[in-house]
Length: 225
Ligand SMILES: [Ca+2]
Ligand SMILES: [Ca+2]
Ligand SMILES: [Ca+2]
Image (cartoon, rainbow, N blue to C red; front, side, top):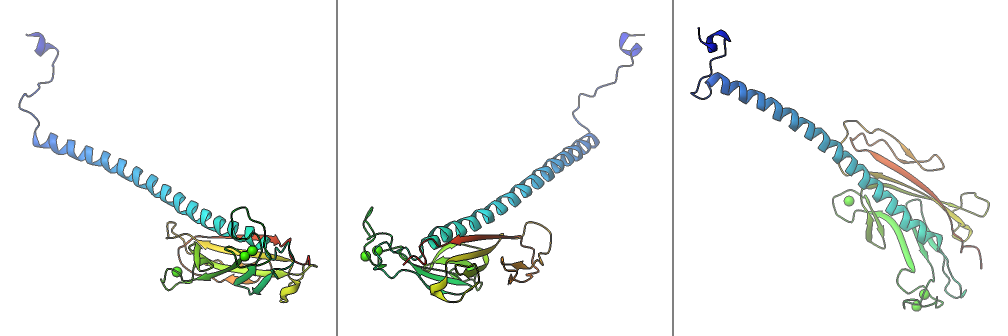
């Protein structure tokens, strides 16, 4: 009896793989690839979800940032000659003027509101022409996209709502932004309210996530003159 027979060593073929071995090998590697792919896909999807939410957050914050900064300065009129103030105020748009410079870098207010960035309107518009009024425009230039609602509430010196332009001292702004496409399997049937409890966006019943952001702005230049 030879050593090889004693140890019952398996007999290896030197003729390559059999068809069965090949098939088993292929199935195993396909399963492994499938597992890797589905892991990659779910990670990629959660990455996409995060990206979309981050974009929406950035969008709504940018919208609010611009409006807060400029509406706070509404009526800025250090010379008392410019007649600056809120010139039109509706629930969905605001038009105001401020004398903040003379059009020259570093220049002082010059008693008028005809220099750039002194006569400002914010409203929602369909600037991209897709049939949906969802762009926040500043003087007809889009500053934020995917904005479903923009709402202004005007308050007088006592904090009561007012429709009289000369009485406005502060503004409540509420913005509702949506994600640019559906990435979460759910139906959004939420109703969005402003700070007064008034509905500014009813249930959309779509699969788009939304965020609401509100701000209270004291217009420090109104009511000074
Ligand atoms: Ca000016
Ligand atoms: Ca000027
Ligand atoms: Ca649009």
